[in-house]
Length: 121
Image (tube, rainbow, N blue to C red):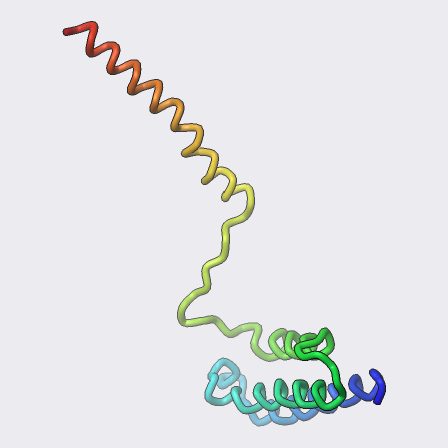
């Protein structure tokens, strides 16, 4: 079997998924109990045929269909528990450098204050 066959079969997996998703209303798109069956069918189909045709799974073509499903159907879904991401690099750099730059200043301040205290005594 050739790569062309896998490409054709994955398209059939996608078409079946799209057909299943026709029964899902817009308000149900983010409800896992509703979309889990079509989503699992898509994933299962892609995985089954990859194994059957001796392809690795996940593979680029299968991932493309999974990403396509998220982009087309689930892009407006938000998580109840938000996922936290790293801040942008410039903010992260500032958060790292600021305390490092403060250390010599604080050490100098402590030494200066302790010398000033000895002078008064």
